[in-house]
Image (cartoon, rainbow, N blue to C red):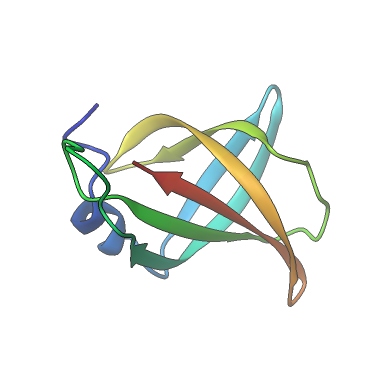
Amino acid sequence: MQDTLTHDRFQALIDQQVNLCIGDVELPATVVEVSARNRHGDAERDPFSVILVTDSGENHGQQIYTLKHDKLGELDLFLVPLGPKGDGMSYEAIIT
């Protein structure tokens, strides 16, 4: 899993669709931004953030979502809603 959660792996997904799953609900979303964050202490990797925008404007709250993608497989990520963006809702994950 550590190798999967890298800035470069997510950067390659910009403008690609993923699915966010919460129980039986599956939300199509697009990876719209991947940004480097400042490294603190002796962290094993450089932290980064990922912004995703769902196709639906419904806010499902901050919680753990399962992200599904053909190349990444399935990953559990804690996502925080940032607010509406166009017709959808934007969410952010911080990977440390």
